Image (cartoon, rainbow, N blue to C red; front, side, top):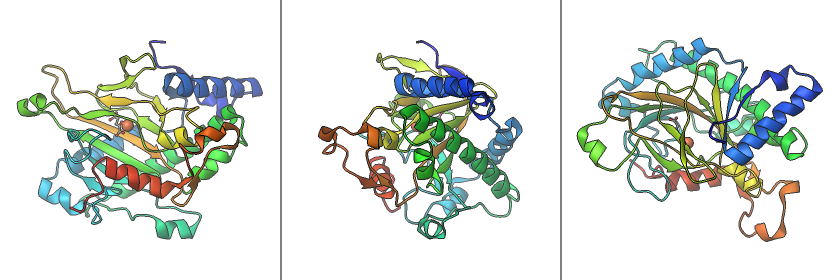
Length: 319
Ligand SMILES: O=C(O)CCC(=O)C(=O)O
Ligand SMILES: [Fe+2]
């Protein structure tokens, strides 16, 4: 397969029983066997995505001195601004050529989880509509994520709300990324925009990026570019889903390469990292159990797993 499979979410949300089954199979198989899938027919408006990109472009164009005012005091980068070059892929000490901003959940059904959650950091009042626009996109993506996790549970043959219940009130983050144009020195440094990595979370939904550069490592070991097209979301699964499914749904390695030649412009992207709620126990799903895997994947709380992984990515240090 040389192309990322494409499917239409309306088959699942509005289709007949057969169409629902068709979606579940295409979606599940694509994630399991290919690693990534493109989804059209979702309800997230293109104009909302554009509005959010405009907001973030303005934010990233502030001076560094202004932006560092929005760094999370604990230095974990869970919310607010994370400086250029700070995050790196696990087992890679070269910082990625990117800066980013994280927005977390504001509306919780379970108030205990709200108390546990890191608080969002909002830019000052030069950005009057920022919060409203971004939270609007957050809740649309959250809704889509719960639908996709329901379909994934059906694919795995487990009760259909198993995965969506884990992500309800989840510690999910919208990440807005800015990859600035690169200097000659940066080109020569050997760093790339985002080095090869797997996502930490259950599932990631990527809004279409403003430029190309995203590549996935196919199961045959080749890098394959993913073009994002208008109206399509790109979806992949992360380490948390891999862990609880006993690697039946592996996390797929991907990266963002540097622009080639003269096309040295900024790239913006907005992945939505779907996480389990903070004190959710990540344990092997019932029908994925094989006794020999318990030693490899002992149960762990979602937040503990996240903190462990953030540190491995260079984000655990106090600044
Ligand atoms: O910028 C992109 O298209 C992907 C970013 C990514 O993989 C990540 O931040 O985990
Ligand atoms: Fe990623």
